[in-house]
Image (cartoon, rainbow, N blue to C red; front, side):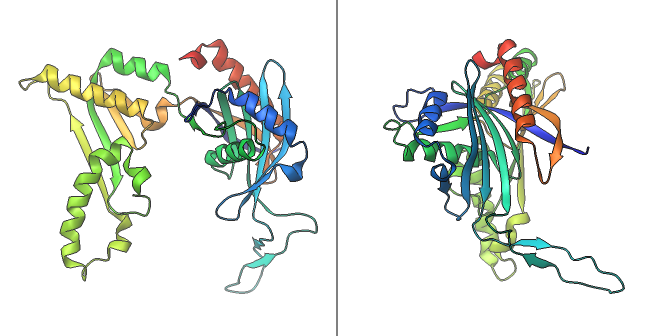
Length: 310
């Protein structure tokens, strides 16, 4: 049987407004009030439907969810098999009666405020969106839906930075993109790169006939902050750089590489807890029960290693 390589990621629920949690309790309450699938369906702003196909609460472990996504009535593209021709169009087909074509799905374990997510073709933010909305629509508790699933740094990588010190920080930032909105600019890389990017854009915009800013998404800014121990004030410079590196880790910034004084490299993807696994294929996804089993094993592995308490 062929298999798929999947990634399990660890997140922690952080409540924004008065939420006491834990998230596990809120989810159990919400799905107890909404026991049937038709009552566990939400629609996002792009008409995609998020639906909890299965919910299970295992005492002493946590709440398991299988969330599927689909766009009602949407056709699927197919590639007709052709021979003896130089070109051929693709076609679309209607979903079978009583069914919809799946856009993706995600399997989740929530234990207390700990969450482990394994997705196929669906961003983990969709899992967060479903959980927020189902808690809200079920009327569990005021402000109970005001939470976010956040990254938690791998303590081993942070210990490495503390032990070896920081030599340089490299940042990547798009100069002009639809994603350069307010939320994106609040990340550390945009805080540092945004001002420089705006100045470069101002220079470019002086001659808009030669360059269309709307088409300038392939322009990028690479900024490197380096520590030079040979110069005066080295202690001060090193302290500032290490403080910045720590803040980037704490604020879950993306798109950076930190080089230590010993020459080791730590990338943004390295400071989150995640694990790759191999699971049997099930169409374009994997079997829910297989994913849940691996997710539970990973949760116990993190718990026994003391990483959930950091």
